[in-house]
Every structure is written in C-alpha cells, then in structure tokens.
Image 1 (cartoon, chains in turn yellow, brown):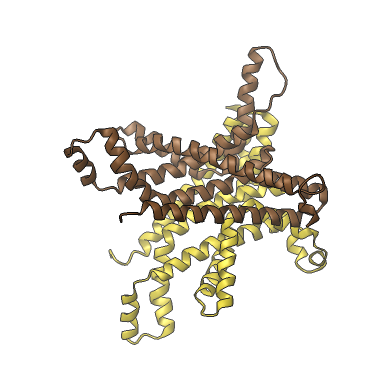
Image 2 (cartoon, chains in turn green, blue):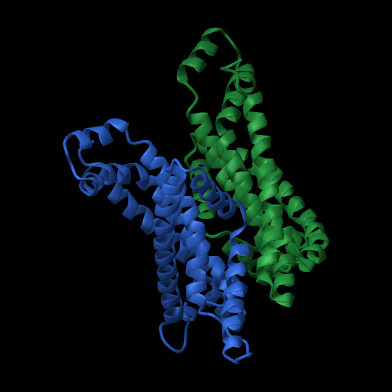
Length: 224
Length: 230
C-alpha cells in the first residue's frame, strides 16, 4: 500500500505526457486520415495507390517498427540530418508524435472511407433531386452521416491510440508506461504498480468511451 | 545485400530464425487466447451474474491497458514469483524466467480478451432455432455442438479471428523488450552491430508485412472453405 501512495503522484504526473501524446496524435491523425480517405476516392490511379499502400503498410506492421524506423533509422541518413526535417527527427518527442500520427492516420482513413462508402445512395439521390449544390451536399448531408457512421469505430481507434502511446517509453520518453516500468524495475513490485497505472489507463479509456457515446447521441438524427 | 547473407558473414540466417520465433510465439499466444476465450465467453453468456462480472472484468482490463504494461507485469512479476519460491528453498540470487513463456502468456492473455468478444458475438448470432431443432432431432449435446453449432460459428467468427491474429502477430514485436530474440530484437541487435538501423528496421517491417500478407491469404481461403453451402 505504501508503494501505491508513493508512486501515485509520479504516475499521475507522467499521465500528462500520455494525454498530451494521445490528443496531439489524434488531432493530426484525423487530418491525415481525412486527406488519405479523399485520395482513396480519387479517380487518378496514382493517388489511389499512394493512399492504398500508405494504409496497407502502416496497418500491416507493428507500431514499434514504425517508431524505430523514424527515430533510429532516419537519423542515420545524412541529407535528412542536414535538412529542416532534423528539427523534428532529432527529438524523441516529435518522432513519437510523427509515428503515432501516421499510424492512427492509416486506421482513420479506412474508417472514414468505409463510412463514406456506406452512405445510402437513395439519400444522395434525394438530395441531388432537391437541387442541393455540391457544397451543401457534402457539408450538410454526407459529412454528418459519415461522422455518425464512423463514431463507434473511431472510438475504438482512440482507445488503441491511447494504448499505443505506451510505446513512447521505448524511445526514452517518460510517459505513464515509461514511469511505471521505471518504478517496477527499481522496486520489483510489479503488481501494485500495474494496478495503479492500469487503473489510470482504464479511467482514460472509460472517459473516451463515454465521450463517444455522447457524440453518438448528438449525431443520432434518426431517433430524434 | 551482403548484410542479409546466410551464414557467418550476414544476418540472413539470424533473421530467418527470428521470423520463425515470431510465428511460434504468435501461434502459442493465440492458442492460449482461444483457450481463455472459450472459458470467458461462456462466463459472459452465463446466467450467473458473478461469472458475467468476471468475464466483463477480464475483457475490459486486457483490452484497455497497454500491451507493454501487461508484458512488464508478467516479465517482472513472473521472475519475482519464481524468486520468491526459490528463496524458500534457500536460493536468493536473481532468476530470469523463460522469455518465450512470459511473452506467449502475456500476449496470449491480451489476445484472449479480443477472442472472447469474437466467440461471444459468434455464438449469440446463431439463431435459437438451430439449438431448438438440434434438440428436437434428439442429437446429443456434444454432437450437435460439433456438427451444427461450431461449423456455423466458425464461418461467422473467421473474419474476426483473422483480425485477432493480425493484432496478436503485431503485438509479439513488443516481447522484444524482454530480450526474446524475435524479429524486432534480432533487428535491434543487427542494427546495433552494423550501425545500420534504417536498413534492418525497414527489413523487419518487410518481414511483418510478408507475415500479415500471407496470413490474410490463408484466412481468405479458410473463409471460402467454411462458407461452403451458403
């Protein structure tokens, strides 16, 4: 019990970094995801394949490999070290965010794509029949429906990203998992630390879950 | 390409065996997961409230806590438990438990949490009439599960089992933190000794892509096979 009380402030302090990494990556990831989802609908074969392989590669390999390639791998290339990219790639913090963003972006693009693809054709025909212009059709009809349809899957992705940020500890960052590991390896009391750190993660996952539930109700037009 | 030579001069053979190790850990882990999923899915479907709660606790915890944290729990906790027992017998040195077992068990427990949901969903989606009809036909419980329920369940569960397999396969990369020489750990060693991390981590990515690609092909064939008659 002493260890729980002693480690709690340290773990809570580290939670700040975990939340920060999760939120920043998710926000960037939504834009990256939306961008590649649009590319995927393009009639241009090159754009289509860029988006296809981007999502295929980032979903088919472990996040750990992606972080290691970005943090350890790219640092080895001379022209990158001489370029402006080095500002991002020399810090483990920005490397982690870059890796998380690209990873969640790949999953998000698939979620958006399938949400747009499954919009009922009749609704779109009705909207065009009513003479709504393209702008109106996209922002007032397509987008709200797509958002509603992608919410449950996106909620899962948010929790996956929250868990994914634990890999920041492998590139020397002291996030919640990083600090938890440090405490475990100095005290050899894994169970207590696991319970405290695990509960913090579960609490955050619970908040995300309820946030998504709230949005689902907000975008639920059918039962209103 | 010299870096990948097979034998003493390159890392080809080491990476080949590391790939086999990744496959072995993933297979053992998913089987442990299936075993746990069978138990916890029946808990979740049971009419007993306490069993429901245990089932819900298991799936919530192991799907909500980062994989890495679970691995640390078992890695440090496992050797702690063994050392505790050793102390009773008078040995007080540091003992490290087998990294393969620690890895397979921790990934297996996580994988099982996902499989539990898959199994539960599959059983629930089988129409009640199927159970009733089998009973009316006078089939023995064991037989109607094997001949009627499970084949239908497999067809419905296969796409999701394929997802769980992909997750499990990718999660095995995290076991590298315990020192088990699978793809990630071997690439780390090779990158360190050749000072060429870009090449070796990219090659690791290619190996994982190959594994996920081949398993997708395999699952597609299985899905076709089990959809026979629909």
